[in-house]
Image (cartoon, rainbow, N blue to C red; front, side, top):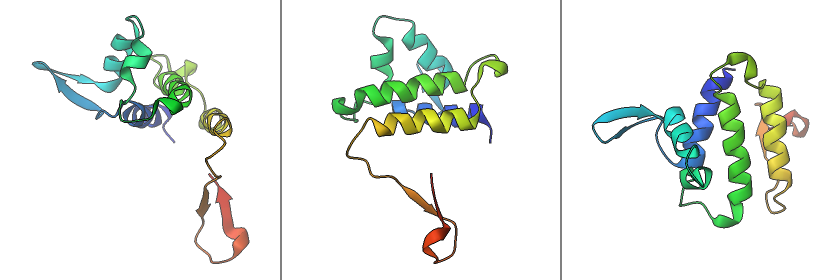
Length: 116
C-alpha cells in the first residue's frame, strides 16, 4: 500500500477537509495546507476538524502526527504500513470505549475474521 496516499486520507479524516481545496484564488493541497498551519502557534490544534469532540483531541493529534510522517517529503523518512497500523492501534488502545473492529474475509466461519 502507498503510505503517502494513506497519509493524505488520514489528513482528510483528521482535518475534515478535502485533499485539494481552493483557498482564496489558488488551489492548495492538504499536505501543504496542514504543514503551513502547523508552523504557526497552536497550528496543530487549528487544523483538527472542529466537528470532532475535544475528548478525542489527543488521539486526533496522534493521528495527525502519523499522517505527517506518512506524507514526509523524503520517502525514506516515511513509516512502513506495519508501523502505521501499530501506531494507530496504540492510539485506539488509549480510548477505552472503542471495541476492536473485525474485518470479515468472506466466509461465514467464525475463524475467518481478522482484526484490522
